[in-house]
Amino acid sequence: MAFLKRYLIPRLIQYVLVVWLGITVVFLIPRLTPNDPVMAMIGMIRARGSTLEPGSMDGIIADLTEMYGLQGSWLDQYWAFWGRLFRGDFGVSFFQFPARVSDLIANAMPWTLGLLLTTTAISWVVGNIIGGLAGYYTRKGWSRTLDAIAMVVRPLPYYIFAFALLLLLAGFMRWFPITGGASLGAIPSFTWAYIKDVLWHAFLPALSLVVLGGAVNFQIMKLLVQNVNAESFVQYAKLGGVTEGRIVRKYVIRNALLPQITGLALSLGQIFSGALITEIVYGYPGLGMLLYNSIVRADYNLIMGITIFSIVGITTAILIVDLAYPLFDPRVRYY
Amino acid sequence: MNVLRDLFRDYRFFFSFIVLMLVLILAFMSIFSPYDPTLWNVVPRDMKPSAEYWFGTDSNGQDIFWQATFAVRNSLIISTIAALVSRVIAILVGMVAGYTGGTTDRVLMFISDSLLVIPLFLIMVMLAMLVRQYMNLVVLGLLLSFFGWAWDARLIRSTILSLREREFTRTAVLSGTGTVRLVLNEYIPFTMPLIFSTLINNISWAIGLEITLAFLGLVNLNIPTLGTMLNWAITYQAMFLGRWWWILTPVFLSLFLFIALYWLSVSISEYLDPRTRIQRVGA
Image (cartoon, rainbow over the protein chains, first blue to last red):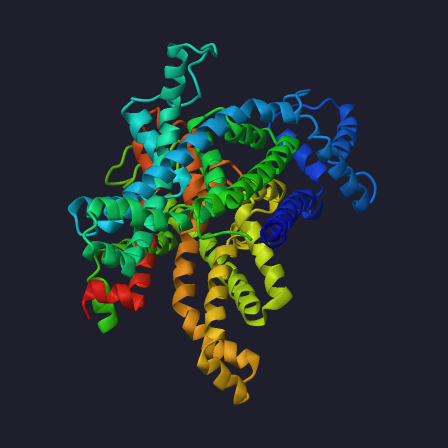
């Protein structure tokens, strides 16, 4: 019971509050910006070169006002906004009319989820193992080389790194496709040819996410391991004649890994944003590409849908990682 | 002078120093530009790099070298505004939360935690779409600064928390030093190195986000920045048409800038941390 009171319930309250805050911000943004969002959208539709029939303007204004839920007082709007969210109703996309925003997101989700889960898992595991080894064997040549590489890769933003890879490996070398999640006209099926095609298209986006994420994990893990190394139990194990490999695997890396679980939870939001940007660079048909198209076409409803969906998704993922933490750390017991 | 000599022994500091100097010189050269950066077709289009056009010209009929001087200048202006303003927010939030504690601390930390957890990039896209017509260097800088303080406020808060428990705080309070003076005279100097290294990281972060937003077309594309230069090059398919000088200029400039800023912050914070300094400099 103490576990419930001391940990689970405060954590759940925090979760609900963060989701509430995020979605309230999404609600407030179009209402706090100095210009009328409806007029801004109409201006943007025009700027994109779509022609509007003379008589249709009033209709569009009414539609947009309704779509943004701009009728009535702010409090009424706020209630209506939450009501729609609880029904899972994000409205319809403006430019792929009458496709529902929730359906569009559902179509894009598997791509993003597949890319994000694999790359996050690979970069976390690989980055931590290599970082751990490099932190233990600091003076070895390969450890220094890896450190130098991480020093170059680490500061690069997702966009620049992804774009540089695209330029080099797809633009100039032509080893990989420039864009897309699968070849045009390929029919989704469980055949080897299709799977190979998808993997080939996913390789570059995945590579850029893995290298960037791996470099971060590598550096942090290396530092953590160097701190654990200084602890007396490591000295004791060495003096006691425990083999080096066993010390690294059983004592050093396992101890240093724990803060990295918290680190993963904290950085998930950034990793997600990075994955969206990477998808845009590679034209990968996930949420990022959907976001890009909705920006280009000024489809504000779709952007709101993606944002709300992402806020809920990311905070939930972080909650799960946090709640799973005691499973990994035997010292944490909530009773 | 000893400080500088020790710092220059680190190849990373040396590299960053040279690169940042070159970048600053490039930015200042924009004063001498013979062309107005907002005008098109002032030089022949799509010329390769030559003695006359050092970095070549682009499909808008602009000289890439002089365009790059403005781009670097504007990117630095945006990121400096963003970094300085967000430092002020981070210092205020971190100091207040760390020093007062209690409910204030919990509320402020809840807000900064939320900013860390929520995918901010999407929120920024929403905001940028709606204020696009007001977008200029200052607005963009302020927009970025609003989102860039959360992590650093946490760092400053934890430093203050440990400073508050030290002996000198009690001595100062008991001898009648006011809170404001205590914070300004005692705490700020202690946190200065930390603030400085977060400042550099924040500049780098802001340049990166500006490039991303520009790539999405969410800034004023007529103001040359590293991001808008890249945007134009991509829009005109410079990669496929073999106009490498056009697309590689902003790419290389930003690559060098990011690496230099990061190495600068790493080498300075390693120097400021006495444990790592002993390892490296041996003094």
